[in-house]
Structure formats: C-alpha cells, structure tokens
Image (cartoon, rainbow, N blue to C red; front, side, top):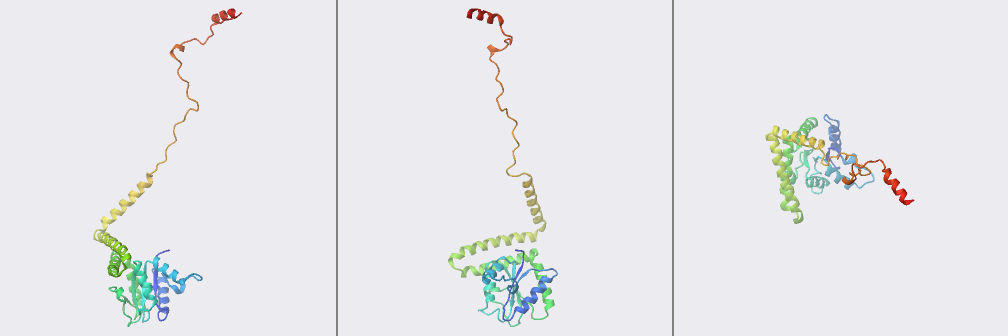
Length: 249
C-alpha cells in the first residue's frame, strides 16, 4: 500500500470537516494520499478489521480534535491508541477550541483549525513536508521513544520485554539520525559506499557459473606398445609361415 495518512474523526461532530480536509489534501499541491473510513471502507468486509489494517499500514495519523472525539468513550481514542501501539506519528488537529488534547498525546503540538481554514491548511502542509526532512524524522523518533517509555511501566509483564526492545532500537535509530543531521556529507558517502558494494556484488555473483569442462575422449587413447613389441615390422614373415604350413602338411 502506498504511503498515506489515516484521518481519525468523530462521525457525530467531525465528519464534514474530515471530508473537506481529505479533499484539500488529496487535491494538492502536493497531493497527499489519505484514508477516510467514510470513503475507503470496502463493503461486505468487517469494518473494524479494515480500520486496524489501515492504521497499521499508514505512515501517520491525523487526529481531529472535536468535543466528541476527545471524550473517553469515543472510538477515536481506540484509533489513536492503536496508532501509538504501532509506533505511528499522531498529528493532532484542533477543530473545536474547547477540545482538550488527550493526556497520552502530550507533548505534541496541535495545528489550530478552529479559525481560518486556508491558513491552517498551509501550516499543515508545511508540517507534513517538514516530517519528511531529517529533522522531522528525528522528532518523530523522539515522539515514539517518549510514547514507549511512558507505556513501559504501565504495560503487562509479558509485554514489557517487547517494549524494552523497541526502546533500545529507537535509541539506536535516534543516534543514527542525529549523526546524519550533524554530518550529512559523511552519511551521503556511506550511502554511496553501500550502493557501490551492492553493484560490485551484482557484477560478481556469490555462485559464479562454472565454465564447461574441456572435451573428453569417449574411448581412452591407445596405450603405448610394450618395448618388446616396438620396432617390429608390420610385413608378414613369410618364411616362418611357409615352414609352419609344411609342418602342418
């Protein structure tokens, strides 16, 4: 599935806004692929499984904060909580000024859409472009690390080992990304070296094709005649033959 954003919203008070936002993001420029359940749910298949799969495969989630979407019983909480579980970046969007950012989404800064739509949309586009930059990728990793560290002490014992493994991997990724930001030329050289190694590997396959072996005789070559038989004349010894015939006669 191509890269796309999952839009989480409340059907009670956020549907029209979610569809308007999806249309504007898809129209571009640049065009952004979005997933909205109202349009992308396939009929005849379990809707809940499709939503979970869309969250699992999305690049990040836009969470539209309305009065209903931020309440405890809202289905949106299940969606953004699942996004955090899958280590996805959640981008809060404030639609209703009275809506408060859920505790688990702190310290993310929301984009305010409670006023002028066009200016807020321009800011969202700028933010999405920044997310693709080295600094944006680093910040996304830091958000994911903070989420994992917050989840670790609250998780069940059987999940803590997995979360700890995720934390260690995120720390390594953050260190690598920071190195790229601090010295982009060195990072570019490493990438080029890796490409050169791959190209050389394609030129010299691990299992080279063997050349055909030289031709073989179907029958072995004649052996050298014994020394006692060499230098004998091939002409018949008629005198010996005549003597033998006389004796036989």
